[in-house]
Amino acid sequence: MSFNYAPAPESRGNLSIKPRYGHFIGGKFVAGSKHFPTINPATEEVLSQIALAGKADVDAAVQAARKAYTSTWSKMSGKERGKYLFRIARLLQERSREFAVLETLDNGKPIRESRDVDVPLAAAHFFYHAGWADKLEFAGLGTSTKPYGVAGQIIPWNFPLLMLAWKIAPALAAGNTVVLKPAESTSLTALLFGELCQQAQLPAGVVNIITGDGSTGAHIVNHPGIDKIAFTGSTEVGKIIARAVAPTSKSVTLELGGKAANIIFEDAAIDEAIEGIVNGIFFNQGHVCCAGSRLILQENIADEVLFKLKDRMAKIRVGDPMDKNTDLGAINSKEQLLKIGELTASGDAQGAQRWSAPCELPTKGFWFAPTIFTGVTDSHRIAREEIFGPVLSVLTFRTPQEAIDKANNTPFGLSAGVWSQKGSRILWASQGLRAGVIWANTFNKFDPTSPFGGYKESGWGREGGRHGLSAYLKGIGHG
Ligand code: NAP
Ligand code: MG
Image (cartoon, rainbow, N blue to C red; front, top):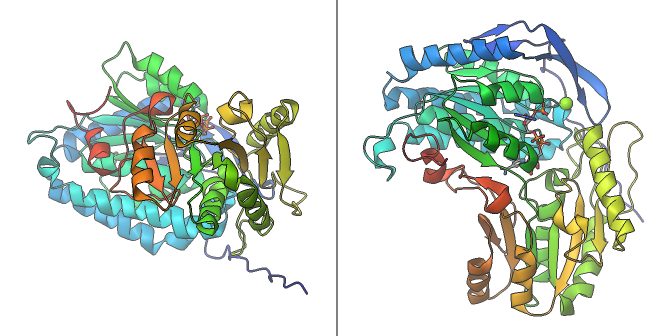
């Protein structure tokens, strides 16, 4: 007998998406000249037309941010700045359903995740940093810290609102004003955030949101009126930005890609580890920079783990992101789907064995079934390059040192996971792993108080916690 879930779709009611948007500059929405469509990747429905900012728009946004910095924000006490941040945090909570639905429509991620992870964590980032605004001298960063001035911030499409919060909350708490560009395929929640800034009566120009493509991002990076660049995205673009700011006095933080190892030792609680593996790679369709995309299994438990993992993967519910029962939503764009297709084809060609969960994929939109590759070696492209999709590469090891060596054999170093019942083994492994975040007997846990960032090609600097705050304070930040 089989029990099927009845559809449980979230409502689109009370959500108003305008047919076209401008830029949010100096506290107002100003019309753009050129536009491009943003779509729902689960249905390919065009949701709205987004403005493409050119050099003049970027310039207007930087000028608005400079004016707000000089005339208002830098003169305001930390206590007053904190009040605005608390207000933004509370408004995000009040309007959480609206933000969650909009995020799911524009990004393709399951409503369960945007509702329970993205939006609450975005609010938590504002609450956390609101608390710091009037206590900066007690953050252990010196007693006379100073903001940079105007921060240019560029974010990716995988956690649109959450990455905005990671960028804007610490910048404002530290006393900077910002010009932020969301990713091309996911601008809608950033634009709704602009409306929320109006509702919070945030002084005009403290937050400016300009939409566009990579060329818009490049205008921000190269604008002489910007004091600090904060970027989250691919290592490739991160390198372009590092080169562009090297000859300038701009400070820079980069949060880039990853290829995290999730190591399962023979003494781990297997059933819990299975949940951790699934959460590690299939959360947010695997569009996660810190995803546990390399499963490193002790050889003597590999058969048992793979048997149970496949059984669990067959139960992942793939489909309509607006359905509250959905676990795995749509791939964010056609380009990303093609990239996943190309990399997985290289896995086949290089001799790894592919297994995909049996599931029916919708006919419209961009979809990829949860997939694992076994028989993967360190030299395979699927073990080295970031797939950024629901695809897990499985490697095995015999001795604990071999696990650490394999885990570290990567140009990245953003995160890692260790599963073992022994505290001593977890501590030993954590000391050997070259990764910014290491989870023990869990995975993909985020908290605004905890610094997040990478080693090697995963980036420069940290976000979250006191470390993240320091990136927005002169003389203390990185770069
Ligand atoms: P991406 O292509 O690097 O894009 C990131 C942002 O940069 C987008 O807003 C993009 O605009 C913009 N951009 C593109 N070219 C630019 C240029 N030449 N100068 C300035 N800005 C430019 O990355 P993505 O494909 O959107 O995101 C996926 C990547 O982000 C993955 O590699 C992932 O690991 C990484 N990521 C890292 C973290 C972290 O915290 N470490 C978090 C999330 C994601 P368009 O959208 O218009 O192209
Ligand atoms: Mg979209």
